[in-house]
Length: 188
Image (cartoon, rainbow, N blue to C red):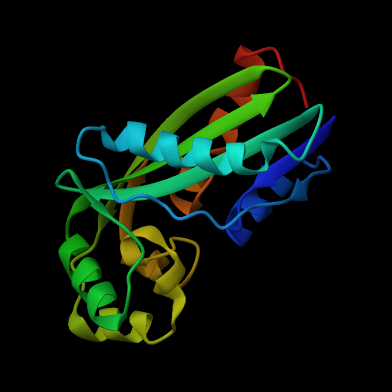
């Protein structure tokens, strides 16, 4: 079975590689719509994952297509990727000392099967000081990440605890993905 990861995220590629299965990466740069308040955050990230999977699905016959999208939620507000240092600073300051949710939607397309699910992890940050935040945003690491941080990099020192799947916070809930495949009778 040919497997296609429809994502530009190098982190998702690394996580999926843990399954020791061959796959390719193919994606289209899609314009993500602004958050639609008529949708729940879970529905929104599942919608984005569907868009990513569908964008490449017509190129492949008999292939398993995987699309994913991750959002960060604080006080029911979606925190996207920061546009600049000022925005990254503001976002990290708002997460300081607080719990937030990381939600990843995943869509699977295979031979007429269309299955979408999400996973949620709660992350609590330590109280951050300005020096820590500025040091991190000066690394340029936050700018391609929802919530302005990547738990797998220097900002790991911000994290007091997580409740849920670590891989989900990085961008792909691998164990849930594997178990969702079993639910729909797909074996890798």
